[in-house]
Every structure is written in structure tokens, then in C-alpha cells.
Image (tube, rainbow, N blue to C red; front, side, top):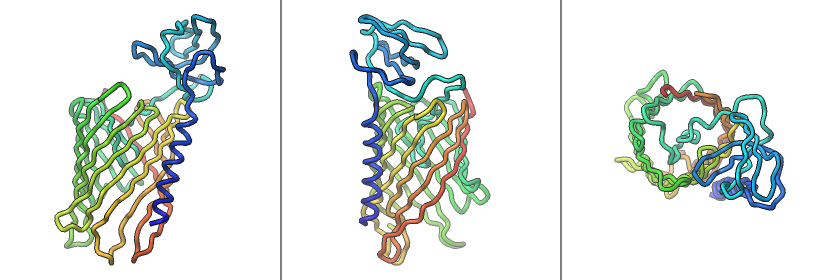
Length: 299
């Protein structure tokens, strides 16, 4: 278990270190050259760069609307989000409701369909039914009967920067021609931040009728946009108190980190997965690459 604890600690410390580097708006302090998200009192978020300042106002240069003169008192905060403005496009994180294959508390957009494919072998569909409810399904692309899931998520916006959700998932895995293992996963999720920079913490439980794979689940996710079209993502999971027979090899935890290449309606995810598993009483790990493609269909 020492390796599992080490992976989890490194994931948490990494997220804390990056978060500690966030730059916020504080009048009178020196400015770091770069692009900022300016949060105004009316809730508007304006992206641009500092041009000049005086005692009462700031001149902000934006790519979309040109130069904007803002009163000092109208700016709540400014978050450094990347390098200098460039001529290329600036794409948002269009899939904030998902880390890699674990959800966040964000909801898919209402009446939008999202498709994901991982390794070509696995496909996923998510549909935003209402503002607070979505459904989804994952399946093995060529043989859905061997692996499939059905999920639903209910979520709500608690504050301007906090969201909460309940995610429930059914999982079917065929171990051989006769044995189809059926499992469930239910977890509560809280996401703090915005779509381009946030932290997700989740807690839940897996369960099955035979008790084959029953354990507590802890999810820790971190998302940060580092350039206009690139997002850093870290997903960490811990399974606690597994009720599995000793002769089985089973997953005990997972830590991962990688990048999401954002485009207008689609994105590419690349990451390194570090699963931690128990094999005959010994903790082992085998690094694996992760690749996926997702696209949004709808408004």
C-alpha cells in the first residue's frame, strides 16, 4: 500500500503546487506579462492583457473587442491563464464535465450530444437532457456485450464557482463466456473553480450483488488551462476497503496526468496512467499511455 499512498500524495502535492502559482489581481502589485481572465463585479469574465494603468483605471487589450478601459473598482480579480495574446484561436475546455474517464460536477450542455473514443476500442456517449440531468453509456466498440456501462448524473450550481453532482453508473464486464460481472458505482462530486481551472473531489462506493468488487472510491481531479488551446488534467482515484477474494488481481488506485488539446467542437486527450494493483498480496504498477478523442454534436 505504500506505493499507492505515495502516488496519491504526489498527485495532491502536484495539484497544490500548481494552484499555489496562481496569480490574482491585487492593486498596487507588479504585473507579470501574460494573458489574464479579468473577473468584473457584474460577473463578466474578460480575457486580455494589461497595457497601462493609473490610479483610477486600467487599459486592457483584448483580442475580440480591442482595447477596453476598466475602472479599478470594477475589477474583482484577475487570474493569469497563459502567455501573451497571439493571432491563433483561443479555444475553451469544451468538455469540463469529464476528466479522462471519471466525471466532474459540471454538467453537459442541455440538448447536446458528446461522443468519445479511447484507443479505438472503447466508445462513450453523453447526452445533456436538461440543465441538471445527463445520461451516458460506455461500451467496447466492436463487442458491447463484453464491456458496457450506463450512467446518469444529477447536478446543480451552488455558487458562481462551486458545483455539486451525484453520479450513478452500472458496469457490466464479461470475464468469460459464462460469467458476466455486474457492478455499480455511485459517488458524490464537488467541483470548485471555473471550466478552465478547477479542482474536483468525489467520494462514493462500488457494489455488486456477489460482493465481488465492493469498495470505497475517492476521486481527486485537477484541471488548468495553460495556453489558449491546451489544458492540463490530473485524475487520481483511490479504492478503499476492497472486498475481493485474495486470489484475484484487483485495482487499488490510479493516478494520471496529461493534456487536453482543445478545438472549437472537439478535443484530443493524451495522458500517462499509473494504475496500482494488488497481485497475490503485492502492490504493483504498470504505466500505460492514454489516448482519446471527443466531439460535441449540437448547439
